[in-house]
View 1: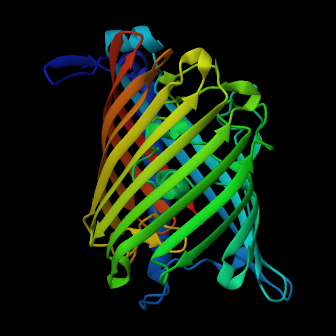
View 2 (view 1 turned 60 degrees about the vertical axis):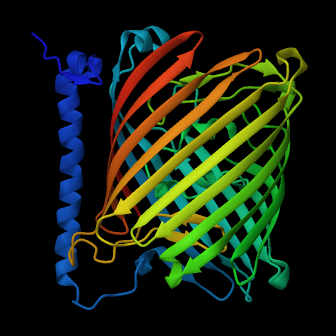
Length: 436
């Protein structure tokens, strides 16, 4: 007889269908996941013990992956992420989405190459590509270029970037993926493109307490892949730190961005999984005729020593006579507490947060331990578009063993309101991350 794991939450009995159907596979994946992480940590700790007791520079990189010559410099990096996602659905969720299986995936296997060009080092380049062969769908390409951009330093006029890069909108999207508080970004990410191909001018002012970016983008590289990617876009963002003290251990971040976009092929579609990458899209407008969209995004962030808060609100106005000009909304509120005393890092020139760097990495200490939470709400129901509304709260724990290794555990509960039904789903998620 197969085992069934049952627990009670808010007066309702929930059954983990993934565990009841595939209990042995679930334990196998979980134990293997933790075993690999443990072996890696032992290796790191042994290597650290052989080093001198003096504390070296933080975020130091091994020299074998760097090159510096008279006409260019190069630094090679890599990022590998493995995830395991487990789901528990009530009867309504099963009817809405079908039975979502527990699943392990290689979330990312990314190669990054960056450096400087010329004797004056005034031009930088950045390339990032991913191998999707381990977890891709049959019709997807095994290799995907995520970024290819060149940036020219214009001195007091700022910098000019040309190529495929992130658009300057949505703080959580601008942040590096390895620095997001929880495993995935909030579902409001459905309304923001991942990348665009174009040109942008960016600069700082007021002693780097103010940043601004304006850019024009198209879907040159993405055409035909997704109707979420729009044809021609103008995007602008301004952000600032009215409070910045103690080298960023105390700060307040404010940001505002705007995006005007034409619809590719006069059609739009917005969809997103429920902050778990192996799950199907919970919210999905389906394709609908539209001319353009206008998006405004508000940002707030605060750091007070080991505590931090981050929040955003996004509103999109869609011009679609056939669908009566719907409006879509998304927002989230997130926060963290780093138990070991570090603060979240902040990039002043870019106006965004990035991942925690442990003061005492494993071998000289225990690394950095962080507790995090988030509540998110994305509503794609308006006028004659019924894409659904998804709400989720999540809690998580991050262990930054070193600057290279990170272990993450998330738990969350979500509710999907779509086509007159309300389904509930619980999430249990694990992540192992290595980077250099």
